[in-house]
Image: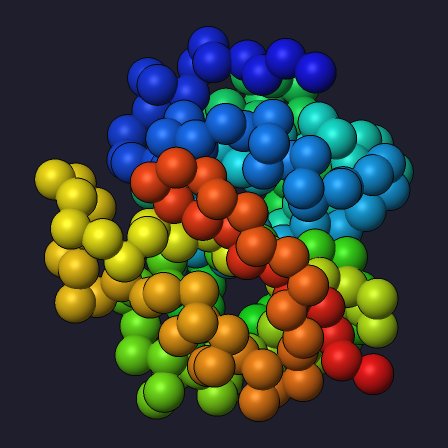
Length: 193
C-alpha cells in the first residue's frame, strides 16, 4: 500500500508522519474497514487522513486538537482528497472527551504526551481513553526516543517506553507491543479485562 506524499507538505504545522515509515506504523495498527479511529492531538492530521482511507466509508476518524486553524486545514485537505469520514473537533485532550463510551477501536496519540505531566494530567486523559475505547480497543502512542537528538522536544520532556507504561498501566491498560521507528517508537496497549 503506497502513501500519498502530495498535499501534506504544503500545510502549516509539524508532523511526525514522515519521520518514520507510515507503512510500518499502519501495519502495526492493524486498522480495518469500519473501524473508529480517534487521533488525539492530531495536529495537521496526516495520520487521520491515512486512517480515513483505511477505515473507509463504513468507518470514522475523530481528529481532535486544541488548535482550530490546524483542524480547518485538515478539513480542507480531507475535502481535497474526497474523504467524508473525518470529524474534526476542537478539544483539549486533557479535558473530558466529547466521544461516546465504548465506541473507539483505536485511540492514537503521536508525539503529544511530552507536553503533559503524566503523573498529574494522566488521570483525566487515560481514564477518558479507557472510557471511549471498546472492550477490545487499543491505545497506540508514538513518542520521541529519550535520546539527545538535534530536533524534537528537549530530552527532559521526553518519555521512555518504561515511563509511559508505568503511567498508563494503572488506568486499566496492558502493554502488548513495542516497535522501534528509528528516532521514535510506538507502544500499544489494550484494555485489561
